[in-house]
Amino acid sequence: MLLERARNAYQNWKIRPSGFSLAREGHRRTRRVREVSLPSDTLKILSFNIQAGIGTSRFRDYVTGSWKHLVAHPRSVEIIEQIADVVRHFDLVGLQEVDGGSLRSRNLNQLVHLASLADFPFWHQQLNRNLGRLGQFSNGLLSRMPPYAVEDHILPGLPGRGAIVIKFGHPVEPLVVAVCHLALGEKMRNTQLTYLADLLRPYRYSLIMGDFNCRPEHLSASPLTDLGLVLVEGDLQTYPSWAPDRHIDHILATPELQVRHSRVLEDCLLSDHLPLATEIRIPDAVRAASLEHRLPLID
Image 1 (spheres, rainbow, N blue to C red):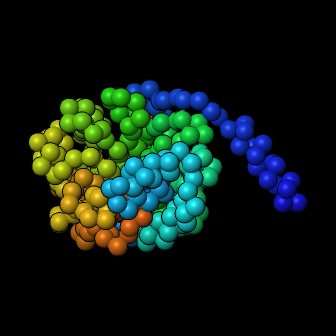
Image 2: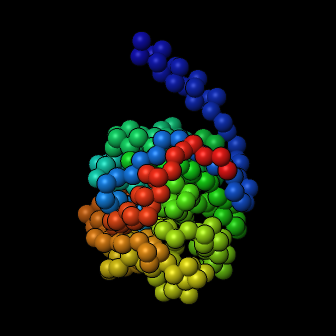
Image 3: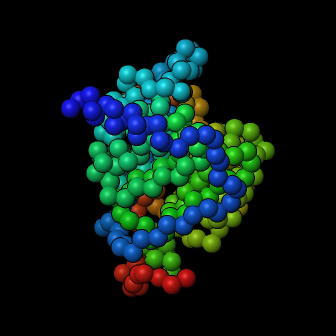
């Protein structure tokens, strides 16, 4: 029996898509759901670059543990399960560097596994870089409430960077959340921020979170300032996790959103980044619109 199961697993692994493919720049896919509900008061939000469960714990691991980017290490699934114990305490979770199922993740879709373990009824994966069996580089969303629309956007620049735009409530007055992972270079990063600013410009209540790969002072001079987006307050050093001295993971919100209880989860040493958490109050106008109007919609 065990031998037969192993043989079947190997055959399934062999027929997995292989090769190298990248999504093109621009809007790629819109996903819609009909059931819409909002929690009674607040949303607990988390942003976390999980480094595909690799678990780097010191700078030299980037060299000595580089093989973990290609094949699974003994603790890869255990780390994902420990991350599930962290994210289960939140209502909305934006993830970066999630593996959708490859050799390095033991062919496990890490986002689906997290959603199952932490009891999230809604999840969405954005595959940004498909290296077949060598890596399924993705952004991810976990949510306790269903959005009415989810959009994948491939950011300008070299392939492999993306953003998810999630819309809650009703189009008359929605709550819009973006999850992103930005480029390392300042010039291209500003181009990507311009793209994101244009996406969020029509909305009164919006929030953007993710791994921005830059410090707060860079954002203060970026295209996001045109929207009046405000960084959550606090001393929020997120990288590197074992000796944090850089604030490069961010959550920004429009001034109309009430944000509170922002913090870094300093004891969560499961990635080379620390998770960043906050809480927002759901605006009365968003709740009223969702109660007054009915879905499905005709655009």
